[in-house]
Length: 59
Image (tube, rainbow, N blue to C red; front, top):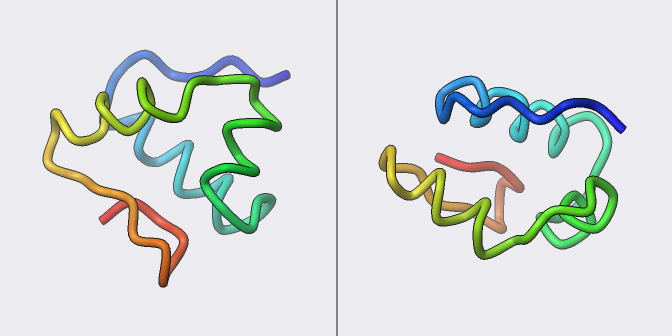
């Protein structure tokens, strides 16, 4: 399992890349990385990004 970045901006880039290249949904990504969806969403909301299901990325 890849190490998940702790820095929120690096985390954003990592997550959006995984969503684009590997996972078809946020639920699938969280399951594949064994991470909490609410915690991930909260971390990225703290820097102004929310998950957009239509585009499958945080914007």
